[in-house]
Image 1 (cartoon, rainbow, N blue to C red):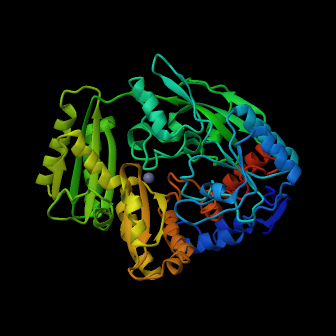
Image 2 (image 1 turned 135 degrees about the horizontal axis):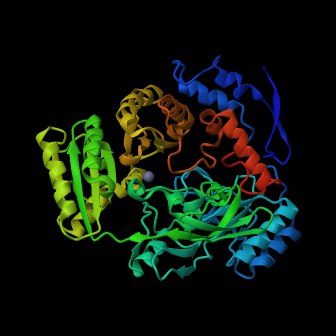
Length: 528
Ligand code: ZN
């Protein structure tokens, strides 16, 4: 049965789309999860029904641009192409956008005035933090009609709670600066990712970022106690509460976390703090098989419980890239292994308990043949050297040529199956391509990056992005996983969303978008 529904007016007018992908599609004639049909076919089919992602909102007139510039004052509006360049290109080189103006407000009132004007004039706004996003959500489209709203000048720490429960920071505060503000107060803000020196709290929350400590402390969503948000029409939700428990109706905060700038602009956040660990025990472990990584994780979790604060993994292809391309790195082992784990335990007392638990887990694992080798850091410097091997892996892939990236999650126990079954799919799409799987094993989160075959033309390889990601994501769908574990949807995965969400979920997301941004001015063509 074919029906038509009105969708969110992404191109400035309601779109009539056939409902076929929503009912017939999942009803089984094309595909039902688990019936053996290729997941890649599902994704290709769903994509063909998505509306065009390019924005067709009106280009702002010179008069409107002058009004935008007046809101932020001298130095707050960038129109020179050379000065705009850092805001228009993301570091993976996938997208280069155009804009008539980059706005850099200093206050929530200025953001409010900007959005009120955008709403009135129907001008699209693309909010941007540190421009470290990995799915193109922060980059305007090539049409050049969208205004970039950079939050980078809203970079004040507004409040450090003396009791240590929370800090209130503005959206443009970098993650590192937020960690340091917590640290100066003798507390811990645990969110940690490779880009922490440049990514900003607003973007971190808008993309619900994860990183290496999610296992113990949760992702950005779990760490946000309250938000200040400017709505699409300029009104402000002053929700900077610091309550752990608050059951007063719908949770508006959670709507904006992970909304990627499509529902409102986060201007400040109240962030949850934790006690600083007094002891950390860090080990780098060598293993022969991916199944043994899963076995080691099960043992570590059982022995350490909530003290297991990191369980990261990478393979020998990844370690080789780090050793080849990152200065001041060396292998912890003389005999290399197919797989490596970086694990860390954190404890509240400096009594050696964490080191004892770590060593006993590793000794027993070695005895049982689960691991082939392990080094335990004796000093903080050694621990940092081990962490460097894991944290520089993303940048180490750049010199190895083009890389097609996937940020997937599956139930932890299914990671070995995912790794094993993804490899032949990759080889089928592009013979010689080199999988570099790594990531946050304990969270079920694999960064399944695939580097180009040695000697292949980079552009030609990257042109095959969707052909490969359709296969990889198809496998993820079959394993009941997620095609975006911590990077978001943005532009890159927008067209795949309908394939992995039910029709009902898509309807609800579009209804929320239409309710909060009826004119579609906030980051159009992203997420939904
Ligand atoms: Zn990650």
